[in-house]
Length: 293
Image (cartoon, rainbow, N blue to C red):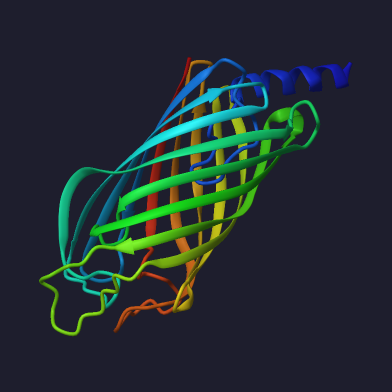
């Protein structure tokens, strides 16, 4: 009888949580049911480089369709806003920038579920994404980038589905080409030759259902990037709590991400020596909302 209740609990958990984003940064392995649609709206606020003023907002609108009970396709539209002043970093932040939400890119992705965490006791999925962007997310200047991301996703239910663990591991390859800026100070380094960047990432997360439809959790993400001429350009570890609400028709997730540690490239006179603040910020806040059809 106990096993029966456990299976029933997992069935309803997987029905309610089918491709819900319990986490802000770590993906889950559950697929979207065949023939169903889901639309997500994601806002990410990135703030504070330790000096001057830096605030950037990323917006991503994503559509997902369940082709089968194991295979989903996605398409996305990105926008960006930035407000930065009082901080110039040779080769990275050439000058102040300020503008509201501006179209910045398009993307598409595929997700295939090999094992379901509800039906097979252990979930396993693969994610392949391709994205083209026209704005540099760090400086806000014009920069054409084409990125390919490949992720492995594992997920498991504990305590009859009340505790959910998920982990991601993978890499992203990017071809980048900055646009020329005419009014830069003499001698300022702003390379316009095409670059290749490779980012390796690993993340893990836990979420606990503390009352019907409500989950509280924590997640962390390690990223390191290698660039054509520099080699290892940066590495960071972010971690923070999240809160999730999910019903049958819609869900929402709020995550606060704090940079715990980082290294490699630093700007002159940077006081936080244990952080990477050239391309990353001290903290991020991400809000997601999704609707099922």
